[in-house]
Image 1 (cartoon, helix red, strand yellow):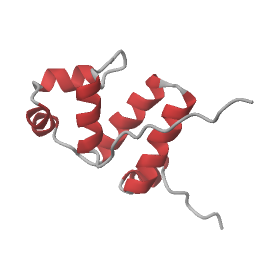
Image 2: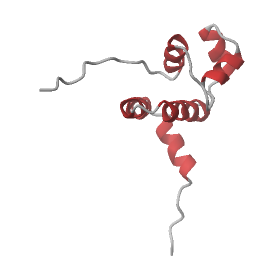
Image 3: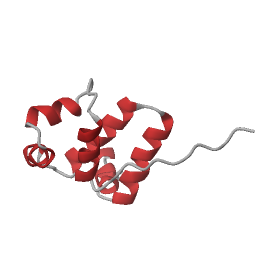
Length: 102
């Protein structure tokens, strides 16, 4: 008898509810230098968490279209918008020094 597998999106939905997992995911995207993957991850987390874009936009002082544009495939959000979106996800950006090359 074969055990039924759990759909991928259902499994990821559970992970996307975990703030530590989300922070690790977004950090990995940043470390890889892949802004497209970063925006995809942010969109997926926001969708799974059912964040209200209108409420997010209001909190960021933007129109809903501004948030949609920032998170779109071709999005290139301003730093203030990006930081605000991270905050809405329960995350923040952290800067650390690079290791010194000998």
